[in-house]
Image (cartoon, rainbow, N blue to C red; front, top):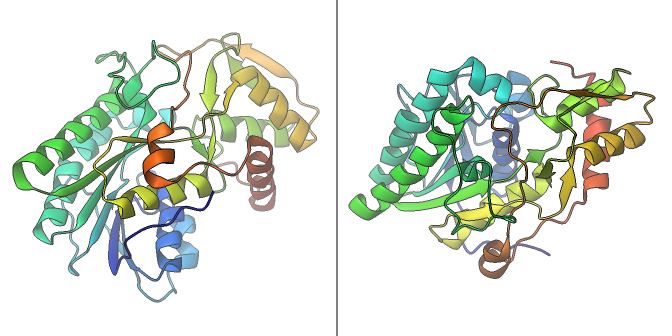
Length: 321
């Protein structure tokens, strides 16, 4: 399915634009003809993610912590707030920074959008559903979240960001949108960021055992980054407030994912079971009825094709960082 947007953009600000999803988003916006200002403090984003963009006309890089300031001179007509540690390894290492980015950083991004009458889009997450008691999860589900658990710094930062965006729209009339992203994967992920796909790929290519937590029966729904970016831009262009789920409704167990990565990588690695993390969700699967009906969007890259592309990228870059 091809997604079309009813709006075009002259200047987009992408906070966290040197991150995994953010860098793909910057490239897609440039390809569409928009000028792009990427704001990143490189606490988790990487210079190499945006290195190919530095010489492209219309691209500007601003090195700044959005929780402290958002120094953008040119008025934007679109602000996409993607700044945040997103992997367990990062938000457990940077708990206060994660919460400040989700609160103060979101406030600064909202104020920038409001000041210039720009469209604002918040990158939220399926983690707002916690360890869900409803499967699949639709946008009306309120979630089952531990507010003081080890994952809470990320979960609650995103939940607060959603509340703040909603309040800003209601109180100030800011044109806001909330997208809830589900388990995106693809090139430019870091091999040691703690998420399942890059961990499994790194281990398979290195001939190491693939470390599956618990009994491997817990599920995730994997959306290739190209599809995720299309969904984000469709939501931005539509004018909806959301929240709207952007993810792949194809559900896979972690054990099956590990086996699939081993097969696609042509690896001889074995599987080793390790302790399951606290508050690790048992299921994760989006209901994307709203995205299909309102945005005309759904993912088109299946797991095998997306994983092949991801494995090829890891091989080509020898990425183990």
